[in-house]
Image 1 (cartoon, one colour):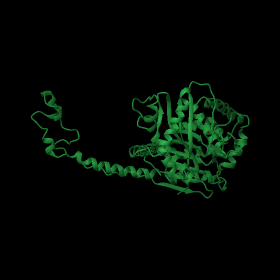
Image 2: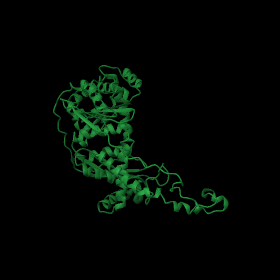
Image 3: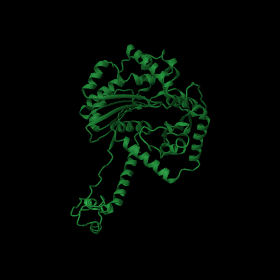
Image 4: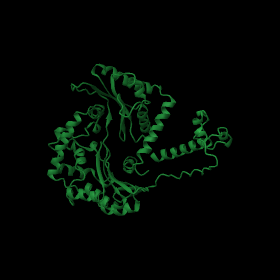
Length: 451
């Protein structure tokens, strides 16, 4: 998908270059008209008019400009190899001196049975701890020695473990990454320490209205696994332990549900290092993802705060319906939004739909922004806002009205073109990051396969 956007951007660049080129090569007579005994750029000293100054768009006399270089930028070629056990290894080469490698697993909170609630949250926090081959101290020292950075994240459908360092150290990166995912020790004191941190994190989530509401929307809107919390319920903390994590990983971390993706690595080198470390993973047919049904609902909680936070959302198609999911992404960019105070200075984001029609018109609304939460088979699109309690009912009406107006066709072509351009720009700028590029490869293969 992003490669198509890149080629369109290159085509657009060519059109703009051709349309601007005649202005760069103005005729010599046009330049001669502004000449006088006094150089044009000094004419103001002798009382000349500013209008007589030569435009900076015109080339200097006697100076010939070389022809522009041809645009030979092409997307890197993606190579994918599927091992006999079903694990996929994918990579693209880049000229950058650094590389990013990630192991992406088709496993998230939707795969948690009630007994396992909170397992993916704890697994995220236990990433890159002690393994059967390394202590946590040794692992940290080895990563420091190669100047690497590690991270892990868990979502409702997927998990990721990533490492980033100079491409000289690809063998070390792959070995540390796979050892951390395949052979976690789950030492009691490390698990207990992370459980204490999770308790603090859960308490902080309750103080974050937007994060809290986005979790509540899933619980209210869906019936099934998507309604389960992404964060561990506080009631589950006493039940979670290393043995439970091992059981959960044995069931879900199978070869057919894993993708090793890299940006900035030669494919043959990655394959040579990774295949011996992953070829013995169990070859188990991937289980079907549990289904959830959108049912709609309502959630309210009185906190006694000075502001009322709200979110209005509805169902949209998931990534398996790619065209509709991309449309929802463009719609999010079109509606935009933000806070009533912009730290970026006057005018920042003021062109977006919600800024012009809500934030600029109603001072009682402190923030109003569009959001999406898209999964493989379904998704949510909505508006989050914050206002004074006295204005809350009106603010919710405004949010619903803006959604109706967009659905009713009040978006003109200029708004749509701006949103499309902003979406393309965001995608292409994000993919300049090797870490995001590797993540994009891994997650797209998990979702769409090798096609």
